[in-house]
Image 1 (cartoon, one colour):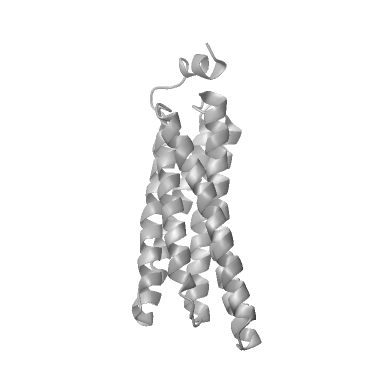
Image 2 (cartoon, rainbow, N blue to C red):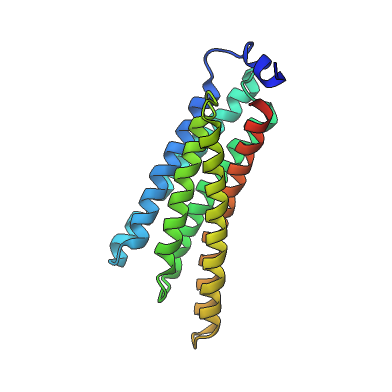
Length: 215
């Protein structure tokens, strides 16, 4: 019997951490859906109002993440290594933080998105977050390791798509006649959007390391 399987015998039946992680991932799904809808909205006033609402979900995720750390300090026996719980909580929180950071920049900079890069990034982020949600829910019983692994692979692939989208957009920007200020603003927004996908990949990598350890 593998050590991970042997350890499961002694784990508490009430796995509070999995419920908290699932709350975080569910909040990320809601946040990403709002983000995607906002960046597809052509009415800029409506778009900005939708983006500002992301702050509520970001704060909610902060509260749940804080509860995870509280539980980590109070529980001697945990269903996963304490380091893994910390890494996963931090990586999921980073996704929310950077998505909210991107939303604020879109609202504050009011760029001219002539290549429709914003909705393209939003689609990639939404697919990545959906895959992360699959990964997180799969951790509770780890019965569908193939499904979890496939979701992790998808996140990695989507991160590559985001890299390509950033590269192609920056090439277009540097070949056009726009002001230096506008170039800096657009570059900043697109780079933080790509960073959101990096954070999704970080979370997927944590999940992969967990299933390797415990499966």
